Length: 427
Ligand SMILES: NC(=O)c1ccc[n+]([C@@H]2O[C@H](COP(=O)([O-])OP(=O)(O)OC[C@H]3O[C@@H](n4cnc5c(N)ncnc54)[C@H](O)[C@@H]3O)[C@@H](O)[C@H]2O)c1
Image 1 (cartoon, rainbow, N blue to C red):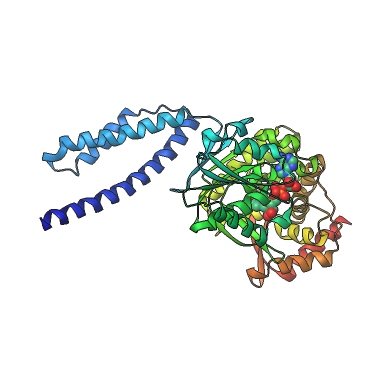
Image 2 (image 1 turned 90 degrees about the horizontal axis):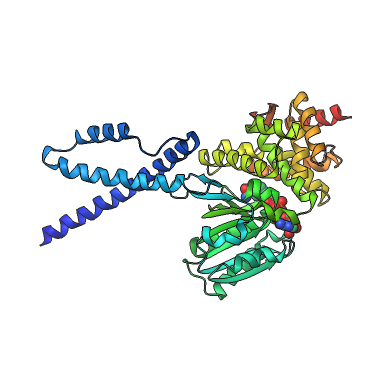
């Protein structure tokens, strides 16, 4: 009897390993599916199936081969059913592959009113928004939730703070939220970062869904899992990597966003085009793409960066292009300029002379600023203060040709000289 139990235990362990391996296999199948979809290839590849079976049979003892054929047919069958389902699926979905943290991003006009068919919100849901986001957006989402609790915070960067974080956690606690419940952000980057961090922390992490409503958040901040709050004036000092379960992007909601915010968000798309996608930059230069296309292309860039470097150890740092001097300008301007406008200005000193001239024209066409008017001393003080946690120097990204980047490690005085030289050139 004891030996039966031991054997069963061993079978349980083997099954657990097989379950893990099966998940790994399905992740690989997901990648193959994406490729087949892109190349318009059929699901069935009979020759590959046959050769796979033949190869695997060579590892199987003679007496088990018939059973193995059945087993392998089952495995391949499930994978084909999955592939067919995926290929027939919504064409507006961009999958982001991160193993068991993988998720889909939907970009479709009008999708806000169908949120419930994409996200598992037929349960207790904390819907977080701010008072600058039209209330109807959070209400539309709430109507599709099983048991919604809406929290509307004041708009603006100041909301990304410890007090708001505490408010959200207490609201969940008071409303009896358990680990089975979830958080949905309906707002810009401020709400996404804050609500995502509350989801990451509550009961060691509950499901999070993001519904970004600004250009910046639709283009950039809603994907990739960086969630955070600011602490004592230090931006994003306390946070986590907590991937959403689904991101729903409805470009229709941008119709209520003011023009300045729309342009500021586009600065992040220009940033991505300069570093990774010369064709997108070309479109900006020649006016050849609409907002939906810009959102999609930017998401494709960010997705591929995040898939390679989820926790920002190397490549993902490139997405901070323009942000070092940009953040310095943001602080020195003390609220006169918004984030995207400062990123626009912060990119200029980091480009070659030729690219700088081209970038200026693009920024002008997007009604973004092109001249730094902040006090240079204040900018320098702010960026060195900002980057002090990185040690004695700072890694900066330079662009000499649209679509290509270089990373350089500079000391603070070298960065000051680069900035001074830029200001001199501009006089
Ligand atoms: N997590 C990341 O990877 C990441 C990346 C980039 C930026 N960020 C963060 O994002 C934040 C900035 O995000 P943002 O630019 O979206 O700012 P935001 O969230 O402050 O939104 C800007 C303004 O637009 C209003 N608004 C939002 N949606 C609206 C709509 N559809 N119609 C009308 N008004 C609307 C808001 O009320 C707010 O007043 C910063 O805190 C930044 O640090 C995070």
